[in-house]
Image (cartoon, rainbow, N blue to C red; front, side):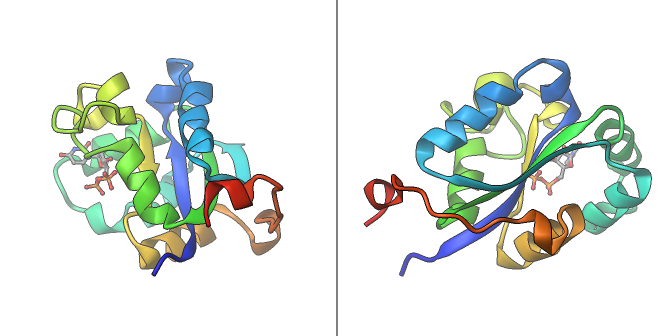
Length: 152
Ligand code: UDP
């Protein structure tokens, strides 16, 4: 059964520095996903530690926090049929070297510490991460005329 889902997506500092935000957003928009929340923000150390709580203590954690706080990011809430899986499949594996060609990480990256984007990996993390980046009134429900041509 398909379900309509929302997922948290981040365009990370490397993609912002390289001017790839528009190109990356376009790929997800063209798949038929709908933007229901979007903002430019600077991730604070505190937000980074909450967002990446599962990685606290790992060797790459300090570098990850330095990186994610180093420049603004764009946070997007995408909505659509099976949105969590669809966004993960569109961005590809964590390590761009292993990401399938045609995915964002394979097409624009080569290093797992500079992998351009983040996307929630399941329903629980989507709920948790959306709440970290967006207040409830920053997420908008809206209908598009095209939605009936995107999914049955
Ligand atoms: N990361 C890293 N080195 C590693 C593993 C992960 O720099 O060895 C970073 C990378 O930016 C990754 C993030 O930590 O996107 C979170 O890791 P996770 O395994 O949750 O991957 P993701 O969900 O982003 O694909």
